Length: 212
Ligand code: NYM
Image 1 (cartoon, rainbow, N blue to C red):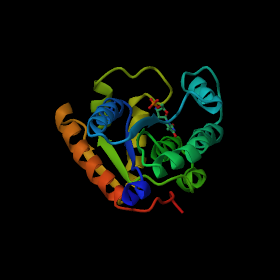
Image 2 (image 1 turned 90 degrees about the vertical axis):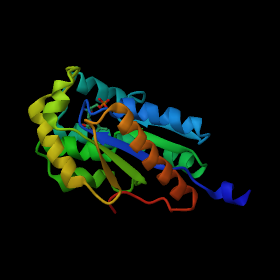
Image 3 (image 1 turned 180 degrees about the horizontal axis):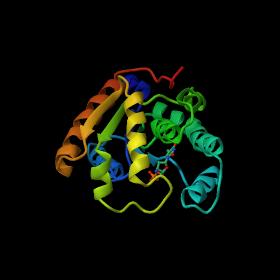
Image 4 (image 1 turned 135 degrees about the vertical axis):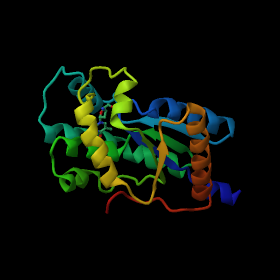
């Protein structure tokens, strides 16, 4: 019917430091929403499957060197190259769970010393998330979880700086969840937040753009 034809999906982003549990929680949330018969897909950035994504992947695994500005713009380009597909999916009613987005882009590059406004500029005009869940973990606790894979940025001192920039980016669409709670508690909270968000978007909340 008319109502369903016009209802759009929600753009739900998970953010947090490395080892905060984003990847586990996003796949659990995916299964849950699928079980609720909600059209949904799980995306992640960087999307390493594209040409730009392969350059990013090679940089992260220390197989190539790029200056800070260049890699920043590649991360951004990697979101831009998915923007139109993202909009099509959302407008056709598919909810997207996205593991990292522009906030990672700005927090990680600012932590290297780049100017934060400069970092935000290329993100302007990307689709704004309807909900950002920040999995909040003290950098020391994240490091203690082990399994930093040896990629660039996976060091305690650097993650401390990233955490500071995430705090600066905190806005009205953010919900912080304590990432040190038991996995099931985090999962439950995420389900509630996601369902509320999906409902609001179905009811006709307009899509908007980031940082304009
Ligand atoms: N990262 C991720 C950035 O520096 N900028 C970005 O725009 C994005 C999306 O890439 N340490 C960093 C954060 C991570 C690394 O992410 C790879 P993952 O989720 O480990 O694949």
